[in-house]
Picture: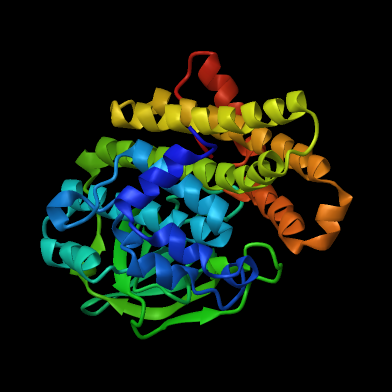
Length: 379
C-alpha cells in the first residue's frame, strides 16, 4: 500500500479521471484567481459526490467523502476548501428537504436539477464570522406585500464566481421583536445578488472567496423554509449533523494539504528513516482521526456526543497538521523551499485550518461544561 493510495483510489472510483486532469494543470495555475479547478471538478461529477442516489448523485459514504477530499486537498488545496461549503450545503439542503420542505418550493424537481445539471451551491451561512454558529442567520428578511426583502452579506463566500445556487439562513423578525430562523435557496443570478472582491491574500486564492451581497432581494413565502416550533428538536439535530460533516470535511482537506508535503519528503528520502517514519505516522494519525469521525457518522452517531467527538477530532487534526507541516518543511530543506514556491504555499495554506469555525477559544467553555456532564453548546 503506497502513501495515500486508498484516498486516490477512492477518488478515482467515484470521480473517474479527476485527479489525472488536475495533475495536468500546473500547481500555481490551480491555486490562482483564474483557476480552472472548479470547472474541472464540476465536469467530473464532483458536485454530486454527496447527492443521494435517489436524486442521481454519487451517494458517497462519509468515509468515501473523507478520502476523496483528502486526495483533493493534496492535489488542489483551493478546490478542496472551495467545495467544502458546497458539500456542507448539499447535506443541509437534502436534510432540510427531507424533514421540513412541505409547502415550499424546495421540491424534488429542484433537488434533481442540482444533480442532473451538476449545480454548484455556495453558502451564506455564518461560516467565517466571529462568535457565530455555522447556521446562525446572516441575512434579515423584512416582510413586504407578497413576500420578503432580504438584506445582508457573506464574506468570505467560497465558490462566489462559479455558484449556480446560494443557500442561506435568514432571520425572520416578528412583531414582538423576536427573530425566528428560516432557510432559503436562490439562483445565484437573482436580482439583487452581487459579488464583490474580498480575498486579498495569495494563499487559497483559488477558493473564489469574495463577498456576496443581498440587497433588497425579493422572495416569496414559498421560497423561505420556516421550520415550525414543534420541530425545533429536529432542527437542532440537523444543525449538529451539519456541523459534524463540516468538521470532517475540513479535517480531510487540510490533512490532504499537509500530506502533499509529507509525500515530497518520502519520495525524496529526506532526513533519517526514523524522522520520515515519525512524519508519516503523524499525518496518518490525522487521517485516521478523520476516518474515525467518518465511521461514527456512518454509524449514525451524530447526536450531541457525536458533535463533541467531532470537535475533539478537529482540534486534534489541527494540531497534527501544524506539527507535520513544520516538520516536513524543515526536512525538505532550505534549497527546496527556495527553488519552488509550492512548499511555502502549502505551508501557508495549511494554517487556514485554524480559521474555520468553531475556533478552539470559542468552544473551550462548552467542551469543559460537556466534560462536567452538561450538553455541549457551540457558540
